[in-house]
Amino acid sequence: MSNGPIHYREISAREPLEVARKLQQHVHLAFLDSGKDPEGLGRYSYVAADPFGVFRVIHGVAYWNGSALDEPPFEALRVVLNRYQRPAHAELPPFQTGAIGFLSYEAARLIETVPGMVPPEAHMPDIEFGFYDVVFAHDHAENRSFILSSGLPEHDPLARDKRAEERISWLISTLDEPTPDEALNPVVDKWQFDMDRTQFEAAVSGTIERILNGDLFQANLAQRFVTALPADFDPLRFYANLRGMSPSTFGAYLSFGNVTLASNSPERFLTLKDRHIEARPIKGTAPRGTTAQEDEKLAQGLKDSLKDRAENTMIVDLLRNDLSRVAEPHSVKVPILCGLETYASMHHLVSVVEATLDKTSDGVDLIKAAFPCGSISGAPKIKAMEVISDVEAVPRGVYCGSIGYIGVDGSMDLSVAIRTVTFTPSAAQFHAGGGITALSDPAAEYEETLVKAERIFRAFRLPSGEEGQ
Image (cartoon, rainbow, N blue to C red; front, side, top):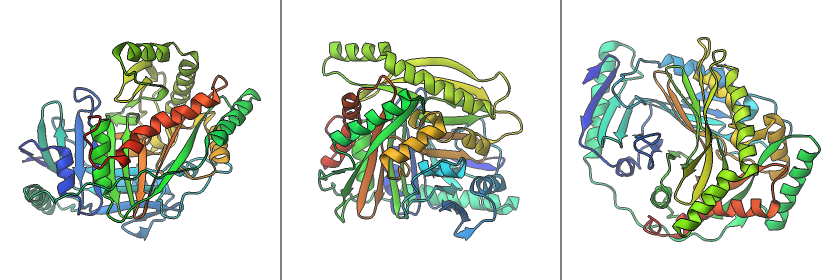
């Protein structure tokens, strides 16, 4: 069926992870996975592969399908997005083909000068998006599945319509093929910590001293965990384990050549739809209790924590300032401040910041105004990033960057890439951290990193995802 530029077909409901498995051998597999809150933020999941184009920024230079572009990275991204812009269908899932990918944390240096920022690792692009003309979409609230196609990169209407129908048929036939056999992963339980307890607590104490000296108000510090992988390790199997134990609203699995990402993020960075902007910063974390009474006590303690509320409010103010750069005057609002949200292993304080994008700006301007999210950098943002680079001394890669989509209609939904594992062919790494303020306790901050890391450690230890489901 066609609705102007977007062709679509509703098919029998399919489980998105199963669709991802069927497409696992295709290039640039992208799976945006909502495993929590089907009636709200987690309503839709998307799977795509075999893009017609790849936009990549490496060492500050933008490339389209391997050819260098003349424009600076974000302007080059804008040019490519505009080239393939199409109107959307109001009654279909929000992402109706377009770009899926990531921005690494170090992409911030392409927007602002960050003194001392550690450069990215050689294998890690600053930015990478696949441009997909055919997408599987699943509506979790109504248990409905769709295949959508734009027919791009064809521009002639007849050629575009023909390609759209051919691509829909291709994806349907692929989904009808048997799912490849999958073996359980070997257990991985040997990790190298970048900092031991003494080193991390010293880093926190040093940051508190900088805060008390007036250098900054808050900084998000993390430590990195690295492991070697056996040759037969399957990152998608790992991701299935992780989502089985801890469903998240903004999960993602991207298999982009030598870099594969498995993200279990609960945090939205930015969404843009019809000029409406929303950000949902998370600051403030407490573990779940082992009994209902203990769980309620921990949740209430988080809500009453002066340190966590101060930290959350500080980041809300930072985001309000960031969004005001590209928002209509007086449109920035905070409908929820320090609301409690509960996940499989943690409670969080989450705020909501909304605004209306001004008529002279687009999604690329919005990203440039707010990236990286203040909740994982600190305040003031540039100074906090300088402190982070000084203390951590290693690149973050996609951790604390962003993962998500930019649709053909200019709509956008991006996560904050926390709880995110980066795989290369022979190794895996991830980070865990927290916000440091003048009220922080170094020992408690170290323990918080371990609480956040434990679900990921467990997903590597288990050959199957049965435990904790």
